[in-house]
Image (tube, each protein chain N blue to C red):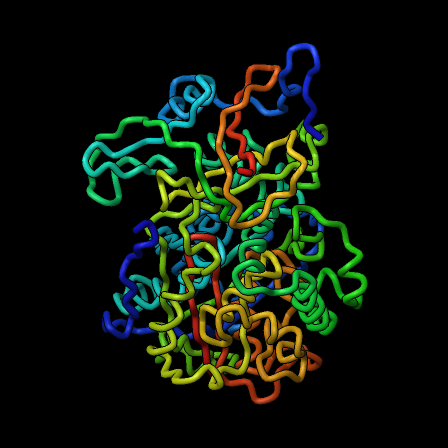
Length: 396
Length: 148
């Protein structure tokens, strides 16, 4: 069967430690920023170190996702720019938003082994201004170049249009209901001083927005912009005396479909690998019921993506994810707050690291007061990348 | 919209040229030029594999042959592209692309154009027939026609 997966083992089963996140930092986000990718990455790391109250001389590890960052701001560039020790540990794991969330998993092992004491994870988006934007990476994929571009099945909004059509068909959902995801997310973004789009969004405006690839409208698609963010990890026993209340990584697990590309997808395409990454992460974190979770930060490249993850993680039945948005449960004051910074749809196309940073802010209570969820203690991050998914659980 | 050329009885120029040089994927485009659809089939266990992989995920055989698949298929999903993301595609919009499950390869998802000269909107679950159709500039693409 095509959808066979690698067995997911949580770090608890592997008997490894999990890191604390002790600092976070985000640059401004905007359609176009003059800084180079490397300069944005450095800014984000310095902001995160400052948040942690750590000097750059303490930083001796850098872990990033592995598909985009190495060419934008690799370990060598960051070591040279920040003047770090040549022995600084560097590594990459996973792809995009899944890799950034999974960086916590690798950091746990690296810190446990004593290969580093303080590790930064950073991601920079130059999708707003780089040639080809977010489509270039996909155009370079050999399967897409050989079989998909020639027929016009390109880029992301086209594949997700087909995916959404199948979802609507399987679950008998009204396509207009996707607009509730855009509206809910914008409402959160209006409370985030750094969000690229803070202007109010109504269902009428959603319905009036242009169709890009049926049934997806422009407002089903995330932003395309520049920006960067970083977070700092260290061992729990070293985290206590730093500037911020440490945030514990309570559970993390990653799953990769054995082989699916975006379109030669398996029969299970309308599900994400969160089906397999969430259960071990939740077990490890001691989450018996999703009602134990206070905030949910889910990769939202399109409106459908957080819907699928809510279902795959158990926050809703299959086909029931949109109801959480339509009934207001995901909005400020709701019982399942989703993407409390405005996500990729309305805050910034930070490709997943923004979701980690926001979960940290929420559980240590340092989000902008307008969007701080009262008494938030446990946050879940869904890092999605097509064939790969990482579930991360954090708590203060 | 894609239109037929009245003189040659062929579809107008297709805006994107597929790879022509020798590659692992060349036989696919060759099969379309010959008017059929061929996919790699494992010589070990007989399973079609799409997209091509280095070895068969079912039996790990490294031995594949490109074999024709039959024309009957079912629509798994589709989308109608309304924005030109690629150069020249403004001429062929709106463009409906379907994802098919061929009867001969029930675990495969296969991309085809919805018949550009068909009048009927395609729906999920529709039975279709697959054909390779040449465009005026020599490009052949897989086309799905709703079965009646």
